[in-house]
Length: 204
Image 1 (cartoon, one colour):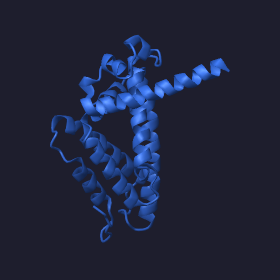
Image 2 (spheres, one colour):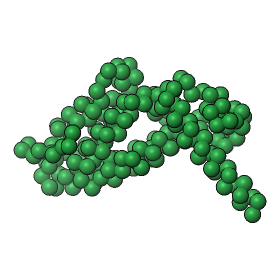
Image 3 (cartoon, helix red, strand yellow):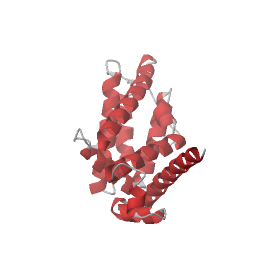
Image 4 (spheres, helix red, strand yellow):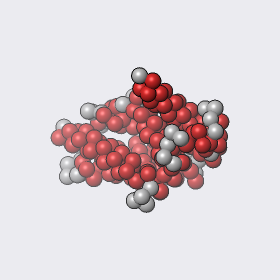
């Protein structure tokens, strides 16, 4: 029983670390979130903090995973949308949110670059994340295409990959051009995918 209780406390502490780290990076930025600062935020030493993770790299990957969980909880339609308009509106909401937390955008971009190394902890995270998102988006786009709202002849899988590519590229550009309006880029892509004569109703 004691062992089970200790395990549960460990899981809870790990969750506290990730949620706190998410807030610190969103507030202070990527450069204000060293392991030392994150450890202090949860009342641990650096060694105590890393006790809950295999490495510093794994810690930051898990922070990104937590960010996705939080985003999904608040914007589920952006990932699980069964309707093109829900996908569009939900995704634009997430893009606007990301623009307000450039520290998390920088963390995402840096780890995405690190994923080029097959041995880096971020590699598996980005592979799984990218495949899952594109599969879901492709399904929604295919249904919209069948309903005449997406250009005929456009491969839904290709359209989903384009959406991901524009989104990730826009985040990288934001780090250099803080004034960039990422929602305009994403919105324009949806307009380009739209079938001639089809209008997507928007609440924006």
